[in-house]
Image (cartoon, rainbow, N blue to C red):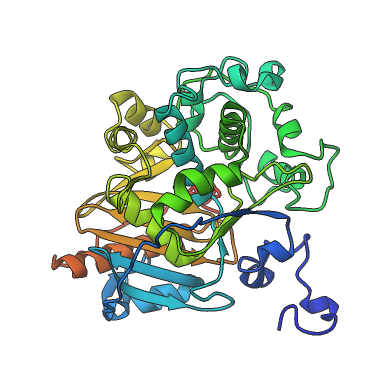
Length: 422
C-alpha cells in the first residue's frame, strides 16, 4: 500500500520525483496537496447546485471498443483507470462511481481541464471590460516584450495560435512542457532554469508568426493566467473562486497548485471533486447559467460553439486536423462532432475528461489515473462509452462508429488535455 507506515518504506513512498508515474499516480492524483503547494479556491457561501439522484444502470449499456469489439460502459471504465465518474442528465445525477483513492469528497487533479476554467475567467474579465482579446499580451505583461510573445494578442493564446516554440512531448524529459514543470515545482530541478513559472515564460522564443495554424501548447494558458492576474490585480485562485466556483454552485472548495512565488499552474494545476467538475459541465450545458447566476457570458459560449471559418481552417490545417475531422479549438475548449451532434470537451492527460452534449442533455465528468499521459485507445473508448450512455438516456439507437486512433507519434488530440498518440 502506498504511503502506508510510519514512515512508509521507500518502495511505498510517493515523491516529487515519481508522483506522475504509475503506480504512484493513482495515489498522488487524489492527494496532490501532500506533494505540491496548493492555493484554496473557495466555494464561498452560496447555494450548492443540486444534482438530485436518479441512478440508472448505465454501466450495463453496450459500447464499442477501439479494437472493434463490443463491451459495456462499466468494462470501459474499469479498463481506463477510472477514479471517479459522474453523469448528469436533465439536471439529475444518473450515474456515479468511484475507485482507487477517490470518493465523492476527494479533490482530484484535473490536469488541462484547468485551461477551460481559466478560459471562463478570461471570458468574465473581457465581458466586464477589464481587458480585450484584441490587446497585445505585453500590454498587461511587459516582461514578455523580449520573449517570443512580443506581438502576440490575447486571442492568439485563447485559440492556441501563437508562434511560440514549446514541445508537449511528455516522453521527452527535456521537452519544454517537462522543463516548465520543474519551474512550477511539479518535478525536481534538473535544468538550469528560473525557479518560477513566470520567469521561465519570459525565456520562450517564437519560431513563426503569431496567428497561424492551431498548435496545442500548455504555456499559452499560463500566459493567459498571468494576463488575467495583471489586468484584475487578483490571483488566479481567487478569480476562479469569485467568477466561476462560487456562482456555479460548487459543493466543495477546490485547489490549484502554485510555485514557490505563489504563481498558479494555470494550465493544469486545478484539483476538484468529480461531482463539482460535473456541475461545471452542467453550467456550460445551460449556456453559462447556474441557477440565478450568469457564470459565463452567453456570447462567449456562442462564439465558441460557432467559430468563424478561419478558426476551423486553422485546426484543419494542423497536425490534429486529419485525426479529429470536423473538430475545432476555441477559447480553451475542444469541440468534436459525434454521431448525434457536436460535443464540448474539456480534457487532461492521464484521462481527465468533461463531456458536454447539448443534443442529449447529458454531461459526463471522469477523473482517472492512466499509467501513461496519452492513450488514443483509452481516450476513444471513453468517448464511445459516453456516446453510448448519452444515446441510451435520450432513447436514441446505440451506434458503434469506427474511430481510428492516430498512428504512434502523430497527434490525435490530448496534451495535458490534448489527444496525442504515444
